[in-house]
Image 1 (tube, rainbow, N blue to C red):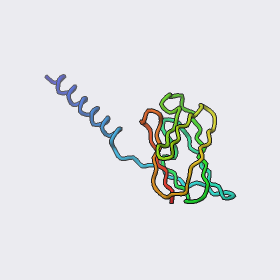
Image 2: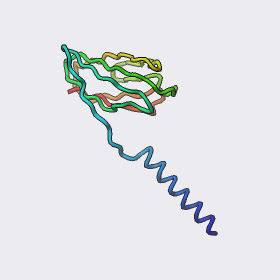
Image 3: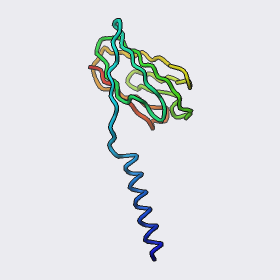
Length: 124
């Protein structure tokens, strides 16, 4: 009887942890791009997700996102920007430049090829 109660309690704790891991609110790192010579650039590390996850760009200034993937997961070997029609392969260990149209303000999302990891792009 004690064994069954212990297993049930451990199971509930694990379910709670899984729920927190996938649905809990996390602090998202936001970073504004550096503007140099009328061009915005920002480096994004791809390792178990995206860092930073939230990018802030200035409207009307050409922007380049430099994704560098160090994660060997096939899930992260592409980055997709649905609003811009971009589906870019990210070779491992190499910086891949993606040019972004900043003519319209708004909040745009990006995701990995399996839609498991996400990021947000804010143009203002």
